[in-house]
Image (cartoon, rainbow, N blue to C red; front, top):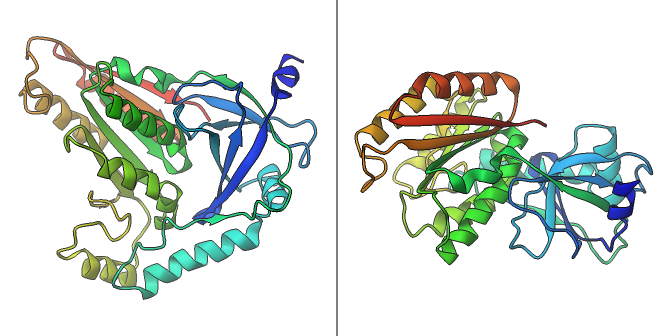
Length: 321
């Protein structure tokens, strides 16, 4: 009952964007809704179902004038939502085909259309939406650690879209708390998925005054065909940006070796190479925040546990979704 009461406060769906690979971005205006980066909410769309509430991670930052969620169309309710807002399978299919065609045909700019999106015509009446929340998430305390390792797998990247934007805003204000370095890992199964947050990552990467503060690590786990491999090799030679993501950071192929990654991170911190100017006798806290499937969570937890010692403390928190 309390959820129904809170959800009936003035709420308006202001904009709908459709990204490649079936991700819909809903931008909602609700003045009474206050949240922090990394939190999530419940959403109900009466035109789809009058009773069903579904949880989604907030992808906007508290500084944005709207609340956004990214929704992938994978079930009955999400497909129904796509049909109601005019972002059904045909729209998504055309976007995905365009992205794949660009990667196959445009050898000069392989990733040019991966971040493209379509804005649904807002002149037509958008359906009523109701949101309830926000609710807490482990990544809320990211500003309380010295090094933050953010790991998203597939659509599990959504909480870190909000956190990265919030970090960006706080950098501009010169207020990032204890945070000195950020390592962001995004593990994707297929290349078109990079389009979900490509423009955001480009903006955050370009805005870094200190190139060492934020490091973006992108991993593509799908099997690469000969044609795609050849296009990547041709476009990557001497290019300033990665041909798949259009970021300065190069895409890595295969699954991350988390044990090796954390071992090298610990060694760099202990050697004083990772956090210049930090007293080596002070204990450094490295917080890992993860959203994604259980097998990766298990590997991350094992790596953080095994690498923790008297000098470097690794913590681990998983977002359940």
